Length: 129
Image 1 (tube, rainbow, N blue to C red):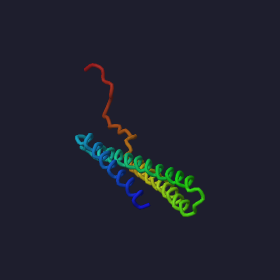
Image 2 (image 1 turned 90 degrees about the vertical axis):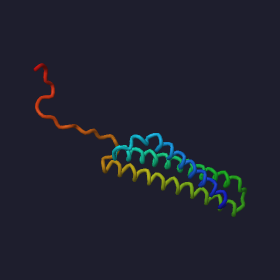
Image 3 (image 1 turned 135 degrees about the vertical axis):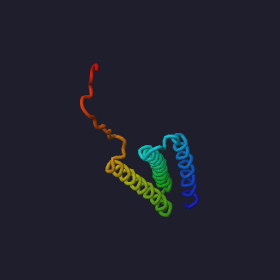
Image 4 (image 1 turned 90 degrees about the horizontal axis):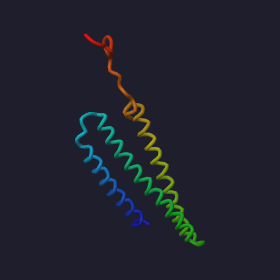
């Protein structure tokens, strides 16, 4: 079981590394302020969470397949049940991390949805001299 679990973990880490490098490289010139840095980190976090969610779903489905194919063998069913539990726990943890990241972005006003109105002095629509 350890060898089977290590392969998806290694593949996920490789995909996350390549995905994060691509996102950072594409936006490397826009790291002038905190807003762009937060936007890049959020994009990386969303990519990582998405990839790990796919892995967790695959682990869960693999557990279901193993459970169905166990054909009454209690040891194989217990092993398959472990895969399903790991998949569900992984999905729950990822949803919690995603919710925490979005809560913190909204709490600190870094989600990019807010606009800043600049103060003005006097009239704004002056026609003529």
